[in-house]
Image (tube, rainbow, N blue to C red; front, side, top):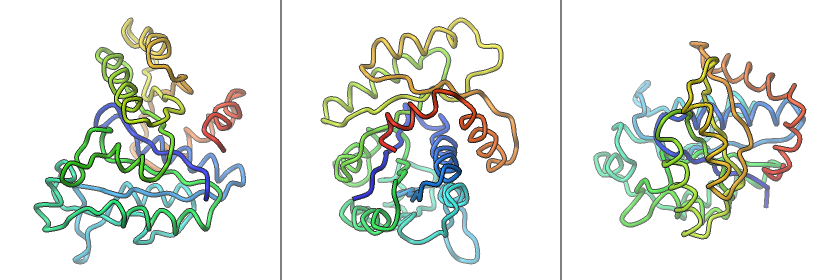
Length: 238
């Protein structure tokens, strides 16, 4: 089975897709055959009668791999929690089907990056949560947190929930640190590292590129030049 990481967030809009795509690009730059997966995407756009996951397409572009149904098996129309979006589309999300897609992807690469939907407690189907999917895939977590007021609480709660569900947290990325951070933003990473029982593996700068792939390329190049990046990748099992 391929090695890999399951990327989750402390909230929506914390930059999970950018982090996932940047790691995929970084691994590709370093000769790793990387697979990517966005198992469930809600709020998809329609193109020529087909629902399209822009997040999944960005992941594929970053990893240099073609899009396939296994990359994004559930693409849902409404911008709602997956369980509700699936209900609107008359679809039932089946974790075993996602696992089958994951296994096919994992068989053809060295490392798999899976991006979850929202946070760990987001409902997928019935009583099943994103956390249950991560556990079914047998993957450690990389938690993406935002800087600023409230992030300590959100990140500690996410890591606590993971521990309660017997999920390993490999590390935390604080994403989007502004060039001139305030007091809350400066202090948050230290507090998170002290309280979460998991290492802060990076504090990524805020980027303002309009084009997401340009942003991913810039971040991957920045990471490739950081002395500690090799240590971070080893922590992630690369």
